[in-house]
Image (spheres, rainbow, N blue to C red):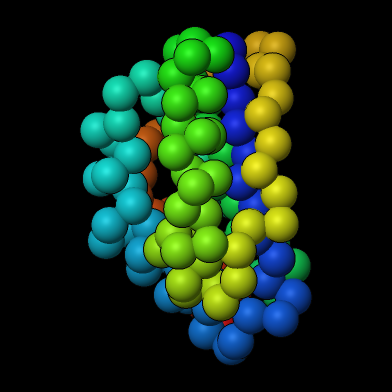
Length: 120
């Protein structure tokens, strides 16, 4: 499988940025990527005050390359960049060696529970 990481730094992002990113993913981004041809799945990851990342897995190198090329042209103006206030620091393709589903199953959700103390 063909992966792509897009990562932004949150080191200099304003207070409330991670909360705004969570809302954006839940309200807009989740549905957008649920309909992206060639995408197997996407995971949004974050470390408060450190980074925010989209991790994509595509069905083919061609699908990944097409998305990467298109995204790189507009990365600085993407919704994530506007919310964070800066362009991505990393756009990196990678190989997915394997994926396993554990006994608890897989949950697709526009939002996940987080500790209220995690709010910005």
